[in-house]
Amino acid sequence: MIYHRSIRIEFNHCDPAGIVFYPRYFEMTNSVAENFFRDIGHYPYEAMMAAGEGVPTVRAEVSFHAPSRLGEVLDWQLLVTRLGTTSIGLHLEAHGDGVHRLAADVTLVFVGPGLRPQPWPPALRNRLADFIAAA
Image 1 (spheres, rainbow, N blue to C red):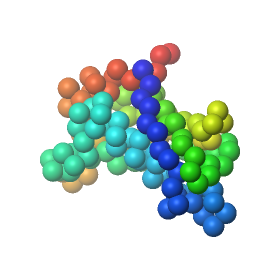
Image 2 (cartoon, rainbow, N blue to C red):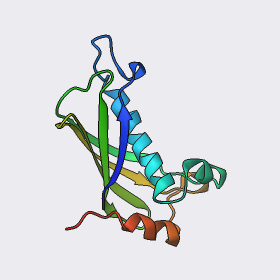
Image 3 (tube, rainbow, N blue to C red):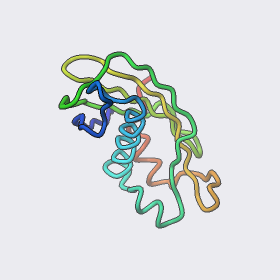
Image 4 (cartoon, rainbow, N blue to C red):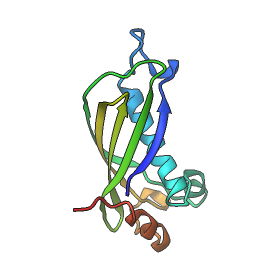
C-alpha cells in the first residue's frame, strides 16, 4: 500500500525566486513520515518522545527532478521499502500538477532511552509491514 499526504507550498518554503529552497524538502519528508507514524502506526511522535523513544533519520538520499513553486500542492507518496529489526527504509515521491518533483530514500532507526536502537514494538511493526512495497 502507499501512504499519501498533500502539502501546499507556502511562502516559508520558498527562496527569493519563489521556488522551494531544497532544505525545506527535508522538512516535508519528515512531516510525511511523522504523519505516517501518527495515521498508520498509531504511534505519534509526541507519544514516542514521552516514552523516551523516537525514529531519527540516519540516511537520506534525494533526487530533485523539477522545481516546486509557491501555492502549488504536492502529492507526497510514501511506501516502506525495508523493515528491519530496528530500522525502516522509506521511499517518498512528490508530484505536483502531473510533474514528478523529487524522490527520496530515507532510513529511520527506532531508538529508546540513550538513543540506542531497539526492536520495533510488535503492534507497530505489524502496522508498518502493511506498507511494504511489493517485490
